[in-house]
Image (cartoon, rainbow over the protein chains, first blue to last red):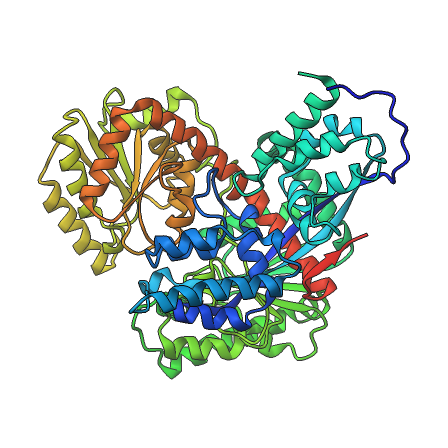
Length: 225
Length: 413
């Protein structure tokens, strides 16, 4: 679908970039009960890191599980059931990180109740709680016309994609990415494009792939197949 | 003439270099000093030789100082280094005296420079006590620990911790290496330099010449492990894996490339075990290379079909990173830092036994297209995660973080 001659009334889109500093918390769990206990009072930012920070960590496509808790319970504790349940958590369903924390703890407690024993792992497979700090900087580039997204997106860094597509979900009122949040300001002219962007599942792709998906969608929208 | 940053831009892309400039902008005008114990040799010097000029290129006022010491000092710091990595070595009082006195002398020489600096990076344990002699320091001091201190000898760690606790922050390579300390502990994994002799592109001709110079047939499949002769690297297990593979791939050759024999009795006895296990098999090549044979190792890695790092204990495993960068899938031991580099079925395979290593080697040699596909992925993986430019970005992030205060979110103008 092509869209031309759109009246530009929204604020310009400021392209920002970010860098994530990972920090050790010094806290680690070797069994499921320890994980639950630590989750009860770990810094909420650490929960964020273990859900989303993975996007900026070394990883490959098709991650089997969507967060570090699920991945650890599968690979270190060998509990596939719990891994599946934890993996099904969508962090954007929760108003804040405290609600997300409660959900994770409840799922783990349910599993502890189901088991006769406490699953544990080898000492070198402990779950190390990491937290993070985000440094956001302005690239001084702005877009006024949504059509410019076609030229801009391929040149955005992976961390810029992280900032606008992932980090945005805890900054924007509707917990959505910055692209949709901006496009919605054009009085509904880009609703179809927003719907297309909303089909990108951020859990199943690396940042490089997310950039490619976004690019394909805006290119098809503005320039046709 | 191109700047160093321009040379890196050819490899990682300008968007990555632009990002470094943006992150460095708020750091313009600040004085940064790196301190370590050697200008040449070893991984830290190798990193600083590149990081310092790159930080200068970004407009940061950065200098690199090296502390000086006599033979006794370095004997002492070697013991500290080994015991922090888990060896059960006691540190006599005389050694601690030498260690502290040498640092005190160096502190005198570096007084003005370090007192005036805005950020001081102290690398590894050798210069760690320096902080004790700078009560009037105005800047932030960071202890950068490059070694695996996940299971240190407790008495020695307690002694070193007495100095380290006074720093404003520390940096460890992996979460498992971090020790409880009363300040922020940043995590920065190591990196490789794509422009160094060890990792730069080589011509096909040079690769072939180097491989053939050791009597290795470049036309036949080559399995390679690069590592010192250490039990934790399991070279005997690699030979077992090779023998199991050879049953199905008779033309395969094995190359075990390690350091020259040293006066380390452990290394010599492992080498003996390796020779015994090799049993004069003409297809097993045991190479003892000098410490500066970077280009040779580069050529061997590029000439190999499969690279193995069958460690049973590993810190980070930079030889794995080097192999992946050369587009080779790695069959690696399921331990330590190998786990974050070898993504099972994507950049290689994680194995626990020689049997597992042989199984994966046979698979890759049979499915050449998979081998090539995984090799391509491996190179991209290193490009995105383990090159020096990422390392530099994280140093800049730590500096910005310390300048603006360790809080959840820092928004720069």
